[in-house]
Image (cartoon, rainbow, N blue to C red; front, side, top):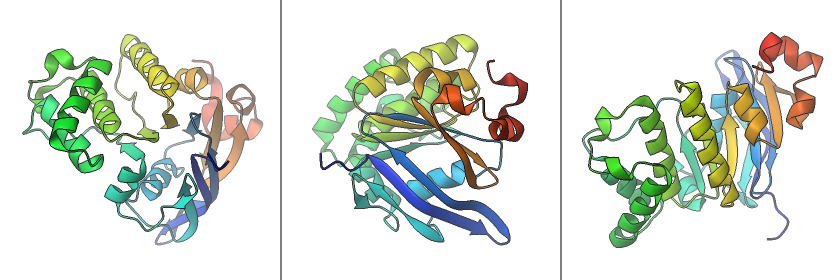
Length: 244
């Protein structure tokens, strides 16, 4: 490596009319790192993810994947370069089976030939615990299995970093623990994780660094156990549920 971070953003800004959704935000994720992004609803977290993933263009600022500029690239090109984005609401191709969903991600997101895509699908279905459901209609999956399918599809694109937008939403405590184990395993494989998450024990349990957004601005960053004690963070978001 040249010393470049895995993912970097400098001065990202985005407005929607008079609303300043993101205001000069900087971000740095090292290779193999896990960075949490927290903040109240409407603080700009999902907007930042859409900018990084190529779904929207910023009004100002730049973003780099291993030193390569990605602002202005189409979402599929950003994905091919190694950035996979999962959504708050899983949206599988409901007319396809679970396996076919992952194969499609490998082909169109990862650029794999069909044979390699099928092999990748089997590998990632096994990793995410979906092998037994490979031939099931994806539209009939439970919430937890839809979340697992989102991860399997992301992994099939051969990512260097996965952006996880509230991947644990709607899960039971037991399902959350299982999902955290899977995310730790993925991170241990060398895949970087950038997590927007409201489940604080997940952020504290996985992420080595966190950044806090409020009203589109970065108000704190650092080690999780230090950041959650900052007065500005508690006032903006965490309140009395820091250790829940």
